[in-house]
Image (cartoon, rainbow, N blue to C red; front, side, top):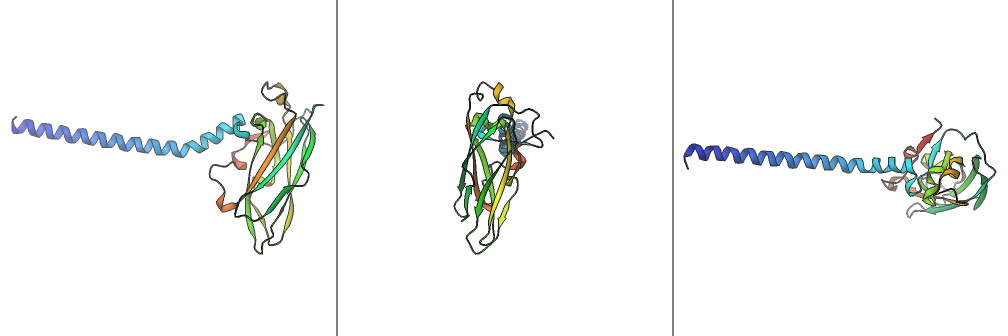
Length: 202
């Protein structure tokens, strides 16, 4: 092989390696972008479908209130490290579909320092998620309790009348609303917060 051919072959190899390196770099950038987009896309999917019990956020109640009633159960949990006591004031309540209802949870901080927590939430069964609407909720913002402080925190909600038209959810007679309080700094990165809820009536 002549020296010219060797030089040409060498240049072709360099170009080939450069293309491979650029392709690999581009693929890495795309994969990184997909990783960062995965959580928002998943949250968006949950907002629209109510998947995994994701609730909705509304600015107003619907105009229609049905005669049919549903039982709402309230569940509470506290993650390790927070040190609060947290429980519903009333364990269950009945609400007519479309009716705005106000419920309360009680939280206490028995420690000798101020502690800030953030509540994550969902409903069960999951098929009820897209019809469970909250107008106001303590879970929309972080909550700080002073040393020894006890507070009652409200949640204003209604069940969307469209639930009776959903073949997967219209048979439901009971929904459980569940909250878990975490230390604000330790809240799971992928957990649902108020800003990820679907907004209706705005």
